[in-house]
Length: 264
Ligand SMILES: Cc1cc2nc3c(=O)[nH]c(=O)nc-3n(C[C@H](O)[C@H](O)[C@H](O)COP(=O)(O)OP(=O)(O)OC[C@H]3O[C@@H](n4cnc5c(N)ncnc54)[C@H](O)[C@@H]3O)c2cc1C
Image (cartoon, rainbow, N blue to C red; front, side, top):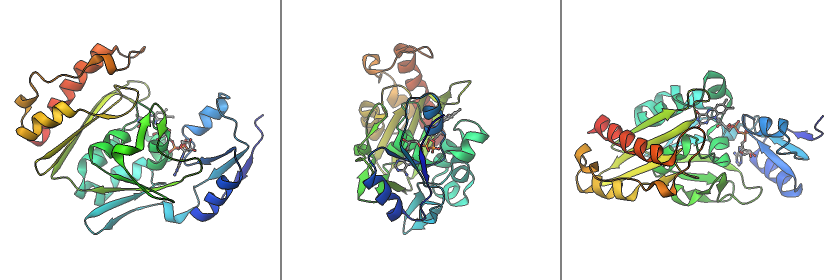
C-alpha cells in the first residue's frame, strides 16, 4: 500500500505553504493522471495536496475583454459554459472532445496544462489562442509555458491558478482522436486575431508547437489554398505504436486545412 499524508487546504496560500515546506509533496487536481501514475509506482509522493476545496481556483469569469478559467475548472464545465461558448466556441469544443464523460468530469484545465502530456488537447488551445497562464507567483505567456515532453516553465511548488484567454475573431480546433483514450494523435488549433494567425499543433511532437510556415502563409492570405505546398517536417515528430511521424505530418496538413475551411 502507498503511504502518504493527505492535505486539503482551503486557500492557494495554504497549498503553497505546504508544497513549499515539504519537498516530496505533490499537488492534486482531479487526480486523473496523478492517481494512475501512483498506482503504477511511477510516483510516490510523501504528501498529497488536494486543490479540490479551494474556491478561488474554480469557475469561469469575464475580466474586461478576457475570459479567465480557474485552474480547477473541469473540462465538462468549460465545454458547457455559456461564457466560453459565446466568446471562444472553439475552446468549448476542444474541452468537449477530451477523453470520455468520466474524464471530463474529473480532469481540470490546470492539471492538464501542468502535466503537459504531448497528446493533451488543452496545450493546443492555450498556445493557439495566445493565452496567459496565471500562477500564484506570476503570469506566463503560453509560448513560454510548455518547454518539452511533460515539462513546463513551472518552478517546483508553483501553482497554476488559472488561464487567461482573449477572444479571437475566429478559431477552430480539429483533432484525430485515439479511438480508445480519446487523446489527440494529432490536434490542430487555428486562431485568427485580425491579420495575426496562430496555428498550434498537439499530439504530433514531444510538446505542443506552433506551425510558423503555416502561420506566415495564412497571415498573407487566410484561405485553405494558402496551405498548399506548406508541410511539417516529419523529422521533428513522434513515431509510436499509434502513428508514424510521416503519418502525423500528413494529418497535421489535413486538419489545418479543415480548421481554416471551418472559419474562412
Ligand atoms: C482515460 C483517460 C483519457 C484521457 N483522454 C484525454 C484526452 O482525450 N485529451 C486530453 O487532453 N486529456 C486526456 N486525459 C487527461 C485528462 O483530461 C486530465 O487533464 C489529466 O489527466 C490531468 O488530470 P487532472 O486535472 O485530474 O490533474 P492531476 O492528475 O491531479 O494532476 C496532474 C499533474 O499536474 C499537477 N497539477 C495539477 N494541478 C495543478 C496546478 N493547479 N498547478 C500546478 N500543478 C498542478 C499535479 O501535481 C500532477 O503532476 C485523459 C485521461 C484519462 C485517464
